[in-house]
Image (cartoon, rainbow, N blue to C red):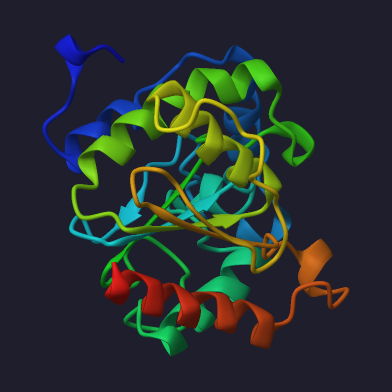
Length: 234
C-alpha cells in the first residue's frame, strides 16, 4: 500500500481488509467452509471473509497471531473468537486486565479490549492452517498499515514463530532493521528493535500446544503480565 493510498484510521483499514480478494485459494477455501459448516455450527451464518483486527485503537500493545481458524474467526469474524485458541487466550487477557470478559463467542458478545489490539499476519483461514509464502506476502501491506496506524504502540506479543517472522519482515520493509540476525524466536524471548519497540514472543495458543502442555496457562499469563510491565516502562 503506497503512501498515496495510506488510510486515516484502523476502522477504514478493517473495511479494506474485509473486502480483500488477493488470494483466490484462500477466498475459495473460506467460502467453502462457510457453506458446508461444521455440524455444531449449522445454525450459524459464517463470516467467510478476511478477518479484520480488533481492539483498542489507542493500544500500546499488539497481539499478533498467524491466521484465522476455519471454524473460529472464519465463522465469527473476529480474531481468536469461537475456537480453542480463543478459549485459551481470552481468559488470560481478562486476568491480565486487557479484556472485559473471559469468554469470546461472537462479534456481538460485548467483548471490549483495553490497551490491546489483536491481529494476525494472515487474514484468511488457510487450508490446513498453513498459508503459503505468497499468501503471507499478499497480506504484508495490511500489517504495514496497521503498524503505522497504531500510533501509541509500544509492545508486540508475537504468538508463534510465523507471527514473529512476520513482525521482523515488517521491521525490514520499513528500514527499522537491516537484518533478522540476532532475533531468535523462543517462548518468553524478548527483544528491543532499534526504534524502541519492544517484542516478546510466545508459543501460539493452538490446541496442539495447549493440550500437550507445551504452553500452559501460567506460562501464557506470565507473558501478558510481563507485557503490561514493558508497556508501562515504555
